[in-house]
Image (cartoon, rainbow, N blue to C red; front, side, top):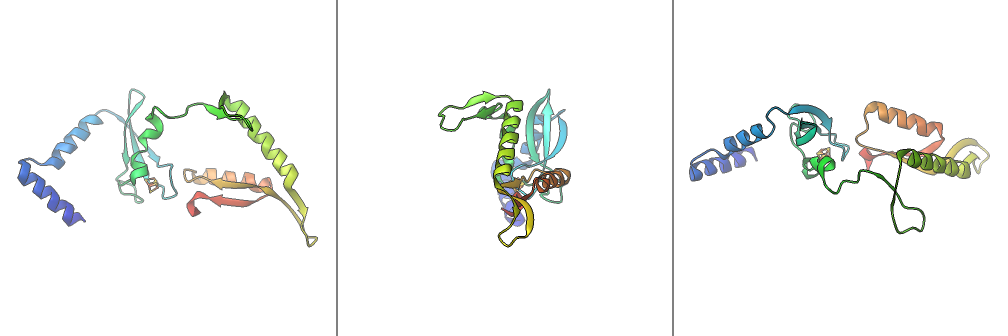
Length: 180
Ligand code: SF4
């Protein structure tokens, strides 16, 4: 593939009389000139490709693959390459939205309201589905009515913490996006 790309680049150079790759590099360097670099991870999947985010005046001006990452060596798949839209898309939902059972409209709620609702429902489901003794008379003390799926953007510590909290609630159905 590298040989093919080199060949294509060479063809562009001779046909147009200048090096397109160099021109593109100059454009890129101007675009991010003076921007602050922050290192992050693509949140989409468990591959965990590293990103560099460039910001200027508090606004993101560019997100690209981190060439120093041993995982992706600067590359991103199409999803990762569109990561900037997560932050800058005009269609981004910036409020917590709730649609009540049977309702047709979403309503804005506060984070406190949303977290209280989630906590109440976790408790209700756990109380309703907690099993202390199985069919064979063994003490099991487990919650069979809730499943938990961890996200690929979890850090090691977040993953450890989430697993501990879920085990403490008695959950046995734990999964991770890495295996989906
Ligand atoms: S860039 Fe693609 S492969 Fe890499 S973590 Fe994101 S979604 Fe996964």
